[in-house]
Length: 274
Image (cartoon, rainbow, N blue to C red; front, side, top):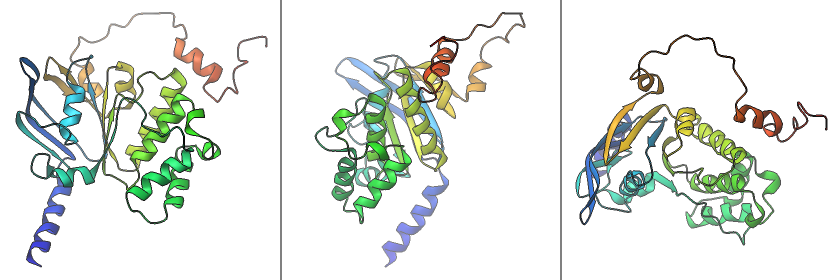
């Protein structure tokens, strides 16, 4: 009984701290030093973007935080649990979505969700699946095999599968790699909805516009270190103030694309004679 009361107090204390705490994280592969002392915190219910080029160490950080890899030095905690000493508790607190959608293409979208719910020993897996299909705008496609899904639909299904069991923290490792512009927008919307519901999201990406569009805070990982960490506004203040000049603004390619197909194709005739 005494131990149970102690655990309850620990949980209450954990809620007050950051969802993710990283300090002095180091990792090397033989002579290659991938992480050289990484430090950052992620507030609960926020979207934190870890930005960096290929090989910067983003995936290594995610693997350490998700207990798939051990750090050489430093400490890391997720949902109040140390990743080295409380790995089982960390795994119960998180979900990880890798760079490529991990769905079973033989099964339907609904069957994929039901399967994961059953593996987690949850009650009413069918209802859980139906709720997530509705939440991610996949109800009409729920009875179709996942092999028939577009890239954006498959990624949304992958994220939906990650949310079964309501993990408080989710890691998205370059979630829009290889997706077309429309699919990227669909995934962005799904990520925003996660944070709006209170889920903490750590997002790794090499796309500058993705971090700018989604993140509450952005950290840039370069040569194994965090070289800057702040809000978008704080990062912009690192550069000289913008000069006021008259420039004739032309529509961007993104604006053209969204005008034509961004509303599920309803506006595809805008500006054309079709």
